[in-house]
Image 1 (cartoon, rainbow, N blue to C red):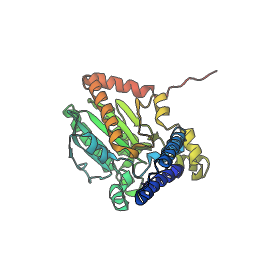
Image 2: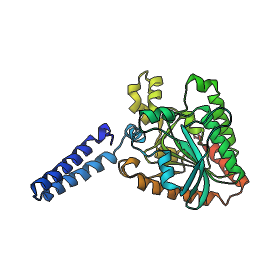
Image 3: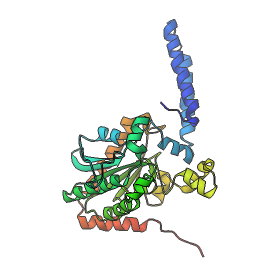
Length: 318
C-alpha cells in the first residue's frame, strides 16, 4: 500500500506490531502485553492524525492510488452491469466508463471516470482525463436512459478533462458545455457522486444532478490546488494554502448548498476498507433513487432548476 507522508507514524507502528508477532511466533513466547501497548498507542496516533487532517492532506487521500475507482464500485454495488461503448462520432473513450446496471433491484444507467492502477493502464485510461468523445458518449447514454425513465448515476473522479491539442480540436469545451445544457433538461433522476477528485469542467461535465453526493475525503473544485497556487502565488508549492482557501471539502460544499450529502469514509480513507465504503455508497444511492423516482419529469426539472439557481447566493453588508 502506498504510504502518504503524514501516515508514516501509523505504518511504522503497524510494522513494529507485525514484527513483534512474527518474532514471538518464532521463539514460541507470548509477547501479548507489549503488542497490546503498541496497539493502544497505534489507536491514539490514528485518532490524532485522522481527526486533525488538513484540507491538503484530504486532497492527498482523494488522490491515493489504492483508492477504489469507478469499476471497483460498479463491481461492489451493482448486481449486474453491461458496458456500452462509443460516442457514434469518433471513438470510445476508455477514461469514461458507462453502461446499464442494477442496484438493489433498481435499473440504472451508471457512468464515471476511470483511472488506472499502473502506468500501462493509466496510459490506456488517460489518467482518468476524458476526451470530448467521452463526454459525448456519456450524454448519448444519459439521453437513452431518459427515454426509458431510468435513473442516472455518475461517479466523478478526474483531475480534469484532457487539455491536449487533439481534444481541443475535437471540441472539448463544446462537448462539456453541451453536457451541462442537456443534463439540466434530462427528465429522469440524476445522482452524481464525487468519489475522489472532482476537478474543474471535467467533473462538472457529468455533474449536473438532482442530488450531488461526495465522499468524506473527496474534493470538488473549479481548479486543482496546484493550479490555483501557480496562478495566485506563482508557485505550486503553495498548494496547501490554496487548498485551504478554495473550500473544496465535502463539509464546505454541503454548507454552500452544492453537495446534498457527505458520505463518511472508513478511518484513513476509502482504500482502508473498500467493502465498507461501497456499502455506504450503495445505501445512499438506494435512498436517493427511492426519493427521486416517484417524482414526475416536470417536478424533477423544477427542483433541479431551483437547486442550481440557489448555488452561489451570498449576502453583503453595507
